[in-house]
Amino acid sequence: MGWSQERLEHVAQTRLGGAKLIVVANREPYIHRFKDGEVEWIRPAGGLTAALDPVMRACGGTWVAHGSGDADRQTADASGRLRVPPDDPTYTLRRVWLSKDDEEGYYYGFANSALWPLCHQVYARPVFDPAHWDAYKRVNELFAQAVLDEADGGPALVFVQDYHFALLPRLLKQARPDLVVAQFWHIPWPNPETFRVCPWGREILDGMLGNDLMSFHTQYHCNNFLETVDRTLECRIDRERFAVERSGQATSVRPHPISVDPRLAAEYLGDDWERRAEKFRKRYRLGDRPLLVGVDRVDYTKGIPERLLAVDRLLQQHPEWKGKFHFLQVGAPSRTHLPAYRDLNDEVQNLADRINWAHGDGSWRPVMFLNEHHGPEDIFLLYRMAAGCVVSSLHDGMNLVAKEFVTARPDEQGVLVLSQFTGAARELPDAVLVNPFDVQATADGLLAALTMPADEQRRRMRKMRQQVDDHNIFRWAGMLLSEVGRMVEPADLPEPSGVTPPSEERQRDLLASRHSLDTIALTWGAG
Ligand code: F6P
Image (cartoon, rainbow, N blue to C red; front, top):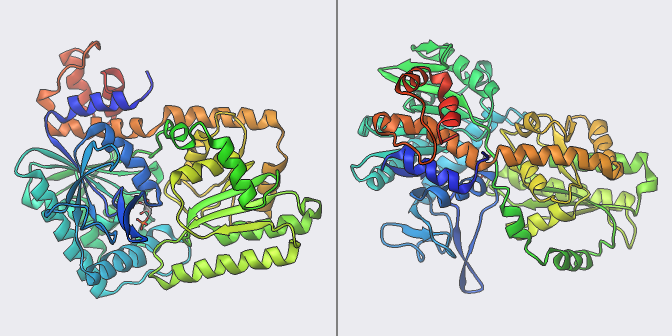
């Protein structure tokens, strides 16, 4: 049986045993902002919110996040709460308000100027500023208070997201040892030699070991994490069960590769996508030329200049392709308060201009850089129109653009050119895999996308679609919930209807082995 929203709903009901689900993520799934004097809501760019929103729609509960929109206060109640999605409310969003100083030190500072480059290792030097660290600690405490408010003394599973909240799990456990706390780290975890330069490494690891479950996209990141803990802290590591024990708290460390909701593609494309595609082609004067597309936040980990250099190389080596295709880069501005990000916007724009100058003419521009936020309706339209989608991250925990692209192709056409340094590359070997640092290899990948025969495209796309269908976001959340749900109330797991549970003896055996948790899920209703 495949994983669906309904099946996840069922798992949430049975596994949580009445405990409240509280998700904590810095980024909110819906941002309210003023536009032309009116309030509008948008979905932010970035994989985390796109992936978790369908989970929250299925499970209900509360999402605690930074209220970052300029109309956010106007659209929430006095406690920062509102029901979302705004057009079809199914769960609660609790906004936490941050001062400018805290946002600067915690989000732009420690999270995105220290941990982000430290974990991605793309030759951007991390900045370790004690003032940033103080703000990071303060904001983690602020969020801990908001979560404790939301739990309201009752049983809860707190599911913490990402590198913004390394200290939060320990703070929660200190205040409420009975809470079940799990964390998912959406970015890579580096090896111990890299991590050891962080002056507050011990505190960060101690905070993360407040979790009952610490999860990463890949086994490789789990290994790095365990190795880092082993070299940094006094603790007991159980390598067989992949767990750490410290101060009486056991933390399981597990890979759970995140994914997307494959049904959303049809929803975003709608019945009129062909009409919209025609309009789009007219508006940007694309004719009927094939499109290669890139869709990213403008971030130095995404390898955007590298892919433009590959376009340049392709046109130098194959001038016969001049006038015959476009490379269209959607680059949502991101973290532009930081000079490295602002500079990157300029760099990409300059590079696009240079390539257009060198190869284009009055009527044809090879590169289009749409440097603005686009909603999912536009993004999925581009995926559907594209001859190829290019994901050339220099390092990426997963990269959900790659998975979204394949969900948008029921026609089984289109080529995914994918960096081998993404988590997604492990699950999608039928993409054209490239090393983005190697301009020639990436240019060859682009050419492959433009020239691949339809049959070959179909063969590859079919396999990739099957993989994402089978390993969708509901499976990701279902597996995680099954794993931690057991910790909420192991004795009270109800028997899912229509499914025969394993015998009591079998259940005991399974529960005794942490390695068997997926097996429990798979053999007993949840899996
Ligand atoms: O990939 C890491 C991540 O923080 C995601 O969790 C998120 O989707 C993306 O980057 C967006 O970042 P931000 O919230 O800083 O715009």
